[in-house]
Image 1 (cartoon, one colour):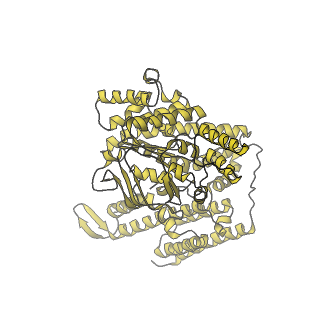
Image 2 (tube, one colour):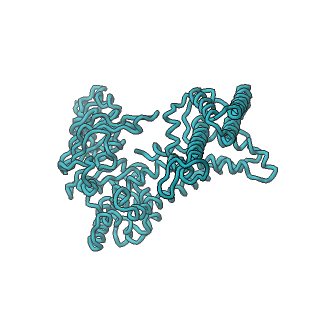
Image 3 (cartoon, chains in turn green, yellow):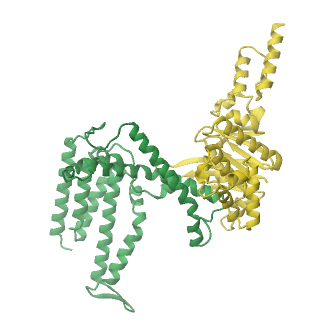
Length: 271
Length: 286
């Protein structure tokens, strides 16, 4: 299995749904609003309502749910860890299970459950954002969104460009790592056998060629950019101008309304 | 060493939106001492096949046998058996990492657990095999070499493992004509002098035609055509069906044939072709 099949970080699935077509700024702001909102939801009804909204948005985007859930795999451990810590070390509520000095309390269990759900939903929202927004669009959007910081002499454009380049090279470098790993295993490198120390030592033979090629690529990219007279963000115009459409306004209003609805349901609900 | 591929299927990213069946129920047998050319359009499965043949990829289904030893067996540690198949990847110079040429070539033999004397003997031998003078190259940094020399060093790194089968994937890509000629000559000598089984993957039909004894043509993960080089390269139509064009000289001979000349098609040597054309010219004149 190739490495790029395992790592879905920043992966984008091209499509033409409403979600895909929205302005990246709208999507980014909506995602931020929803994630902040998540921290104010405290009851199961609220979470349920949020989940229903999220699932309908996913359905509208045409992304397969299975694929979205794959995004959870890397942080599965973190979620489990949070659950265990919350469940065992909470001091509130009545003890329901005692095992030596370890005790599980009912309130702790609820808290653990809520924390895991919150974390899962957080990751799902951000994964959805990157699945329906190409990295270039996303960083372009951030560039525009935070361009007001320019007044404070923050090099917004340069930071956005660095992010674009970094995201652009993740798959390339993963493929390259894959090839080098295979080449060194073919020379008997102990990368897939032996104990952890032997394996780690074998990785020198992977890291050095990888760095060499990354530097070479960086150099070539810098030359290509200079050859096209790139000199930072000052006075730079765009080929694809970002224009807010009416749909963006409706989407933003919808996100806001749904957010408020979630909050009110959360307040009104009993459990 | 005999290699057998039995009903190999390989699927990339099973269950993902970009799932791709790279090999489809492919069986192939290569005997000890053969020189086989593996050709096919981009995406026909050549690179996947060679990675399965040296056990670096595990097939989705099917088996690879090396002299009867199953490389795909999960229960037995087969890494040593696997290393008898030396695979030179595309642009192998990108795997160089050590401070000196000698150190880099020694990487493989050391991983085999050989003692110091044997390792340094193999470094010398493999440098000689690729035609680089050990005294001149041993202590140089691989990063200061020319493109062609880097590639030769990378090949030496594989040869130092003393593989019984050598697989080279697009080994001349991106080299100047002289670098190409050097590498091809070395591979030909290896096959002739050491009776190493060689499998050569290439897009360059001239290269294939001038070297190999048997050609295997892949298309869409299956074998589209195979046979003796002269036989495969004399049938323009069935080759075109596999997405492959004739080598340059047969192309010329075939065009002349369509213009009414009576000439054989599968000639790969310039001198020989010239002689036949001159003969035919003469006959026409008389």
